[in-house]
Image (cartoon, rainbow, N blue to C red; front, side, top):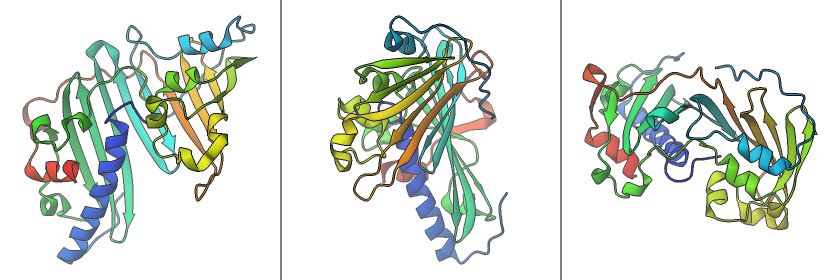
Length: 278
């Protein structure tokens, strides 16, 4: 699942391109290589009686701008994005780690967004000198939106629901309160672009009519906040059945986010924009 425009979708796309470019560069350079080297805190759920309006109750549990900061993870097939949302600072950070086998190295790509400002950091392990070969610094890189082919793709802060859980829940005609903080329903993935973007890795057309009734399970924690939402995507076309899961956790305990300063940041070099603009 991804954020509305340009955040998780961008990092997933760029990370895939970057890994391929890094692998090709390492191989063409003929360099040797060596092997490189949060809990979700479920807590207890409330034992409340069934809600009078389960759908409204579930939507009310989705993180809001006036709520505390939190951590999140989204698992979309084999991709796992981790991040932090800091509503008070209008800030979000998200990262994705990918491993390449031939040659063997690990890349972690992280974006930090505060309002409309964005920074990117790339960490490479497993091949000595790969940062230098790719001309990618190890520090945070401040991004200039005007240097992107499509500035609307630049990651920016877009609110407190990075997985678009609310958009998915709204498509359900009815939601059932199962008790103990658990809710179930059926999402219609064909209802609008925001929902389609939320499941950008899913071939909705291949699902046919099944896309209009995708089962989901949501859990609300004892603190009243949505702690997880899982979509059970059926098989369709060449697409295997899979689960898409988001977890929101550590409400009030997540780190505060601020702009990188001093020696920890520099302007993004041309090599960074080459990855983003590919």
